[in-house]
Amino acid sequence: MLDHDALLARVRKLLAKAEDPAVTEAEAESYNTKAAQLIARYGIDRAMLAAAGTSADEITTIKISLDNPYSRDKAGLLTNIAHPLRCRALLHRWGQTVTAVTVFGFRSDLERVELLFTSLLLQATTQLTRVRPVNAFRGESLAAYRRTWLHGFAGAVHVRLQKSEANATQEHSASQTGGQSAELVLRDRNALVKDAYDDQFGNLQTAPPRRLSGSGYLDGHVAGERANLGTTGLRGGRAAIPAR
Image 1 (tube, rainbow, N blue to C red):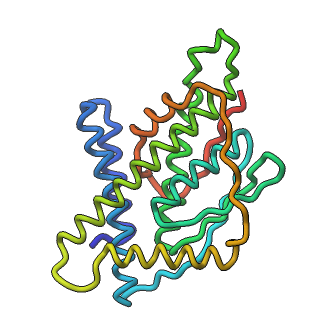
Image 2 (spheres, helix red, strand yellow):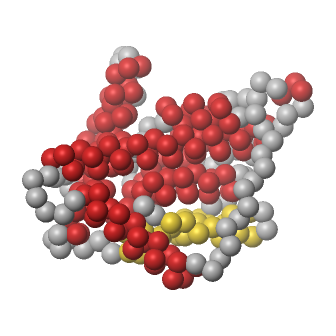
Image 3 (tube, rainbow, N blue to C red):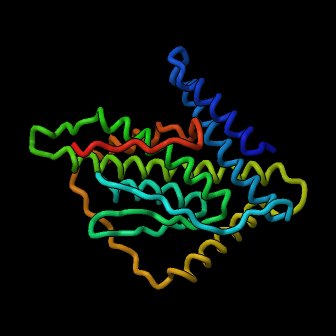
């Protein structure tokens, strides 16, 4: 079982290989997929250790500040990362701006959420500076395109993380020779997080779905399917998405 530092070291090596211009697209995808698998495995390993009483992993919160432009879309990306990793998210709003997101979950899962969000927001930011709507000549604004692009990116990330978590759970269960089932442990943890969230904020109403008019969803979804579900480190600021 890998400890935190060893896992990050392996993820860095895999992503460095994937970024090497000499490797093929298929090889790069293989390296990126392996990085995502390691992060999922780490989450399950920490959950099983906590269930066995050999390590501490309590429910707590982190609050991640956001800024404009596209604060609501950044919050959507964060939420789409948090939910597959068995965490809950509460958005702090000021008018139409999301100023921060509080994420509830077990400490090891919150660590993974923050790590992935930092990396994926940077990836999205880098790509948004290059992409443009094909219908720009028809009057579509760049801002509308970018909002839907980020929505598609976040949706693809959500699906990929769900698959990574499910595959890691199945692999762990197949390798077990005794003890608690990984599936049951994770189900219990998910229920505990939900109960902790509901105790504090269960009376809040869910915001209605947004209506977005841009044409960038499919382009963003494709980019999210190709995004690296790993990171090169825990520290470092998040890049700002340009307003125009």
